[in-house]
Length: 149
Length: 149
DNA sequence: TTGCTCCTCACGTCACGTGAGGTGGC
DNA sequence: TTGCTCCTCACGTCACGTGAGGTGGC
Image 1 (cartoon, chains in turn brown, red, cyan, yellow):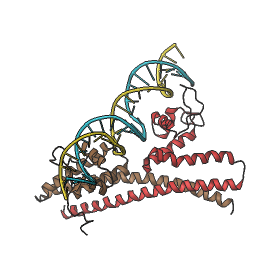
Image 2: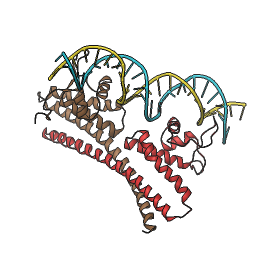
Image 3: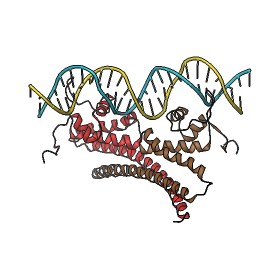
Image 4: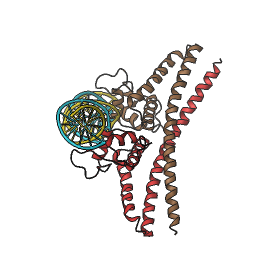
C-alpha cells in the first residue's frame, strides 16, 4: 500500500513528469519560460522538489496545450490570472469578507467560461469533420453494397 | 459573378494559401517534405500553379493537423496511402473490374475508419475536460448562491 | 560507498516565420 | 512599362529532444 501511494511525500522532477505524462525537459522548459514557478528557494545545482498540486497544474497545462492548440504564451495568459487568483484565494479565504469572496468567485467563473468556450469551439470543429468523413464512409459502404457480394 | 467565382481557373500559391487558410511558406514547406506534390514539371524559378483539388487537399491536411495533434510525418503516413489510392482509382475507374473496385473501396473504408477513430478519441478527451470544468463551474455557482445577493 | 536520478550548458530538430535580393506574368 | 506576387536562399523562433560532463541524495 505504501509502495504505490504517493501520499503527500515530496516529488522529484522525474516523478512529477511521469505522473503528469511528460518529460523532465518539458518541466524545466515550462519553468524557464515562467509557466511553472521555479521550485522555490532552490540553491544552484540542487534538485527541484514538487507536490501533488504541481501534478495537477502540469496535467492541466498539458491537456489545454493538446486540446486547444494554443501557443504556450497564449496558454500562459489564460492560466496566469487563474494562478494569481489561487494565491489571492489562499490569502483571503480566512478573512471571510463576502465582497472579496464574491469578486474571486466571479473571476473564477470568467476563467472557466473562457476555457469552456474554447473547448466548445474545438469540439464543434471535430464534430464537423466527423460528419464529413462519416458521409464519405456511407458513400463507400453504398458503393460496396452495389457491387453485390 | 466572375469576380468572386474561382471557377476552374488555375491558382497561384497566394490564392491557394488564402483559400485553404494558411500561408505560402507553409505550402512550400509541405512540398519540400513531400506532403504536397511539387506543382508538376515546373521549371526552376517559375511560379507554382494549383487547382481547386489542391485547396481541398491542403484544407484537409490543416484540419487533421489541428484536430488530431499528429506530427507531419505521422500525418504523411496517414495520407500517403490515401493519395496512392486516389491515383489508382483514376487508373482503374474505367476498367470496371469489380474485384479491383471492391479492393479500392475496402481500402478507402479502412482509411476513413482510422481517421474517425482518432477523431473519436480526441473528442472524448475534450468531452472529459468539458465535464470536469463544468463541474467546477457548478461549484462556483453554488458558492456564489450561498453568498446571497 | 555505489548507482541512480538529478543538475547545467549547449547543440539539434520540427514546423514553420521573416527578411534579402531578384525575377515572372497579368 | 509599372506593380504586384512570385521565386530561392538562409537565418530566426518556438517547444522541446538529446547528449556531455558533473554533482546530489536515498
